[in-house]
Length: 445
Image (cartoon, helix red, strand yellow):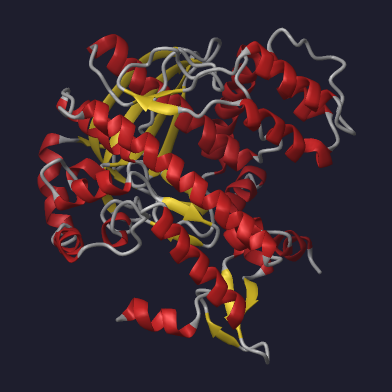
């Protein structure tokens, strides 16, 4: 087997879908229905919402041409997306440049509020849903896929409407020299998977090699600075592709919410994360210290976040899940508020909010609208509560579904990354969605 073939075999896309029997597929479908009912999660969309979504996907190019009069034309700027292999929509894209003293990072986010606004059916439905719910191998969307996967997806080789956050970042301090947020038209050159991004970083002759090397150079420094400042990093073994996306999105979210708070002084949907009590932290650190294969000898317990980072980096890999569980057990739940009071404890940011995923989070959709309108919805406090509650429900449903998959001897991580095929007694694929035949019939009715 060649090196390329070996590395491909180790990836999710190389291993192929998880196979389940018709009986297990039926149990999975029943469990989902049970969770949907318990947490009031709506799978299908009302016909009025679907009809409106379809109508907004007509005459796309003419509409984009008209919009060019009012927007910054960035179509000549080298731009690309990086997402998981199974991503159905691409709502963020990157561009990067540098001079002697600064990096210029552009984070382009699909301009969802151009299509979904407070007077639309889709907005009301998004408020109802609160966010996209991701069960392993099964997604319940906040916005109709017909919209999210077309005009709101930054697909390659197509002009798209975007909301761009342009950041000039000092090379020495990594602080903002300037931040501009504006409506744009972009043209993505290529869609990369995380695996392809890793390959581009290693291949000097590949397209986008230099751009990915440059953006990783910035992202890696941002990551190290966050850790030094006391940001909690629960997943220390992130690959380079994930590091690029995570750090660039964090920087863009930070830029937007600082702009709203300090420069405009408007309310927004801020992400607030309270800290555990000193006693809770003591309990967690003692629990971590007592685990087999954990080394916390070099850690100072004065800053528990740094102590946990140290433990995660210097301990046996088999202890990682137990360390993460000990921390999550004492962590209060983050919530959305119209005031950033208290900041985001886990990230160690004084002000933080969400902007980079308006296709899948109500908070981001609303912050897009606030940035553009420079005004806030009258019911902002209720919207914050709604988004917090729906996120909690979605995460609880996801946790319970993962538990169920483990009970029927399925690995939730494998199901999530590789998808599911239902097979009959002879091992023949019955269908490719992991659904029993009668459910396929119902969904197509």
